[in-house]
Image (cartoon, rainbow, N blue to C red; front, top):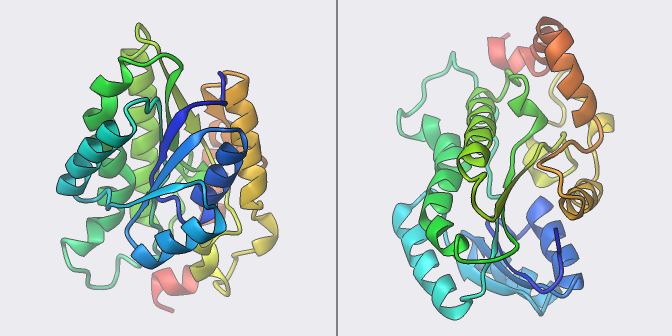
Length: 258
């Protein structure tokens, strides 16, 4: 697909993959709008990338999505690409007590957020040529990462939804793309440093992951597997029990309360 002269909306665009997507897509002469919850971070990205447009918005809130749609389609009517990147990842021991609302926070952000964003923006995207939706999932969508059980469920759910969406939109002009991202050296993974069995040597630089994503989009790939995600795809099919057992060793002391 053509990745120049588009109007692109990126959720969670203030850091990690979102920042890298924004930087790369601006350099390709696109109009880029990013959202985030933190006003300070939005101001910082505006200073780093003066060409970007920023809007405070929280994908876990339906009212924010509705307001975002009204503002973006009014101010940027040529919007034709939506990248659902906003996400949260927590380490959670299910042996501990958890507030019943808070325990589902990653579902609200990582799964319900993209589903609601797409439902809100879909009628608009259907009117555009060279339209696309890119959902950022994870290698963890292929197998559970036991120390992050709710995150694992949210990404597996988003992968399934993305596949179903692709089928339903096959007769439209909208491309549906999934970035199955491997573990990356972003703040998302900082909380796992020091946990038993967790190695930062396996983490891939976010700029390399986004570089692979941009290249995959240009080559019209519907599923993009950077780095170790390719191996995870194969291993999840031929040795899923082995992968789950290895995953269960990461953060075992935290999970089992030892």
